[in-house]
Image (tube, rainbow, N blue to C red; front, side, top):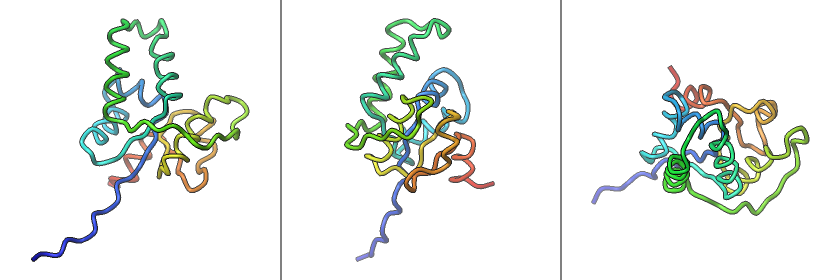
Length: 145
């Protein structure tokens, strides 16, 4: 009988709202990361609070999306992302308290990384051993050239 080696642990990530919006609306690094989650290469996490924020942002008039399009986007992300109820609440970012919900989710998911374009989160660089990176940085980390 063949001995199986231990499967390498998959990276656990939390995608900030700006990443989810970009991935849904445009082709680019963000959509590549979502595709990796869909294909099971990376495990993505979200929370009810982050889904709520995503819905609010997708309703912005500048995106001109119908209720059905928004519902489809939410449904898709609820299927491919693991939704967890954060057990930890932090209040680190004072300039934009909503950003703390991303940290809550990442801590509760024991995530390896937060992927974001948000300047308040990126300024932290790391939070309790969770790397905070842009989509470009994340792709370079996992697929160095």
